[in-house]
Image (cartoon, rainbow, N blue to C red; front, side, top):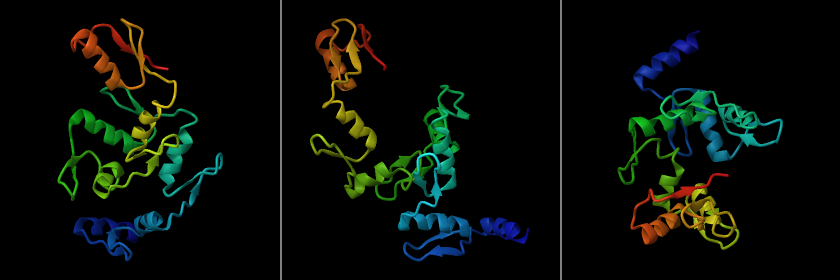
Length: 195
């Protein structure tokens, strides 16, 4: 009971007695320090018994285990979208509220999540592009951008003009088609196909 009281009192004094010497980051709780250390060591102490994938945090393992079951206990009341964990749900809700509680220390841009959590924004400043296309070698800051790019190399064309039947691999190419044939009137019968 004393340790809970001590942690509670410490949270109000902003004292962070647990410091990681490698990066000088400090924490209120020892458990938070130990979890942070895994970022530097690459250790993944929480293993999925189904697939063997390792995770730094127990909560990440729990979220991973919900994926095959399609469990999404966190539902957005604004748009109906479901989430497997509270963290992603909270970040999503900021789309609707417009809240941007974090600020990038490099450029001052307001962000919906911390610059540390939002690795893609941080990579703008470092120039790091960890996601590479195996077909052409082009590199990307975000995995999502790589996946969009890879449509160029595949036969998958998700965006189709209902008027002319022509399909496109990217929404921007459909929009360009719309401007050519419809003078920018996007409600002229072009639709997106979902698979």
